[in-house]
Length: 117
Image 1 (cartoon, one colour):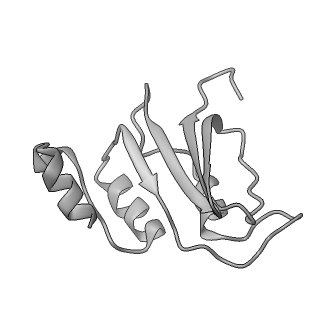
Image 2 (tube, rainbow, N blue to C red; image 1 turned 90 degrees about the horizontal axis):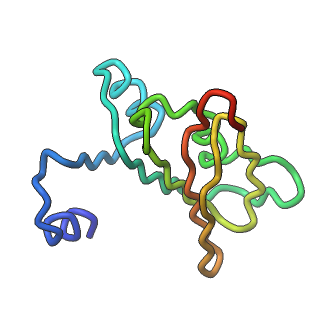
C-alpha cells in the first residue's frame, strides 16, 4: 500500500526510501552512508501496555535516538505509538504536534537546536 501511495504522488523515486527491516539496523546502515532525510515516518509495532510507567516499546527506544539522520534544519520525525504506551520524550526532541485517532497516536518531533529543549 505504501509503495502504491508513493507511486501515486508522482514524486521521483530518488526522493524517498522505503525500508522494511529492523529500524536499528537501518539506522546504523544509513548513518554509515551519511544519509540525511527531511522526514522520517516511524510506525513500529505496538508492544505491551505501559500505562503509568515509562515504556519499553520500540517507539520509546526509537525516540531515544538523537535524530542524526534528519537534516539539521527542518528535519522532522513522525513517531507512531499506541495511546496506552506512556512515552518519555528525551530533551533531544521538541514536540511540534500530537495527533490521536482511536488507539493510535502520532507525535511530530524536531531535533532540538542548541540551547533549546
